[in-house]
Length: 424
Image (cartoon, rainbow, N blue to C red; front, side, top):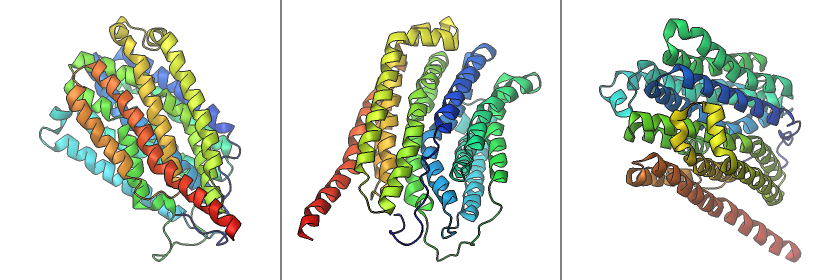
């Protein structure tokens, strides 16, 4: 939970000055689609699927990292030095990088691991965990820049990462080949912006953290578990499809899924603002529910518009973004995929509200949904259409379950508080 009211200066509202967020996220989306479009022309379909499955770790880390952006932004905005965080941030980055590297080496060396994952490229096994780790870490560091009121640096680094990814993929292709160059670009680009962002942060804390210091919200194990399960939920279908579907069908599904993830970018700045305001209200012991209703209305409106737009021009989007007739026979799957990701983005917005509000047992929600997703994919994921509609079912269940766990306790607590107020 957060520190009790009155203990120290309230954290600065990290949603202030968020004009940089839509600009940065929108530009990053356009550059990501350009990167995807460049891969279609330069890679064979099996390699295209492998690269995009590896890139799914990057996509899956995006929205969960937004909540950490907000948390570190507020720690950076604290002016009283009561909550040391730089040293903890550095330890987290090093630890996550070491774990990701160990996993990558294991996937590359363990006999049969790459065969099961359908990853003939050693580079894919080595790079995929690092892509997810460094992408998440770079966003956390960028969030700290946002808290230090360096919105322009935040926007510049958020845009620079996908731009650097495209430049490296094209520049290294003559020496490494298209697939290996793309994988290396996916790993190096977030690492580069991570290093630059860390250089721009303070070198050390004003107060060194002690072993007895209270662990802030974003360093609690339940927060990390929730974010890991939620991030995995958003891309487990592409890994499963690459394993179960024929190579060409898997490549088509993975390509469509990469396009269909744009609702998560739409929800990202709203989730960041909601998390920041919720923590501020809980800190001052005010009800966070009004902000929740307002944000959910905005998220639902924008996501509904995105789903309707895709339903109307889905085939044109596939033709423009992929520019190949290979994807024409699966273009009809784009609307349900967008709907599934929109529902998951809405559920993750609720999940981040629960994290900020200190909901108990929150990691069990995405974990249960992840288990259900895998069971449904085993049963119905034998075709691209089955995988697409399964994502819609899981998205709907995610909204329902997360809403019950997050909203109902908050509403009951608020109702009980209001009933006690007149008597006091």
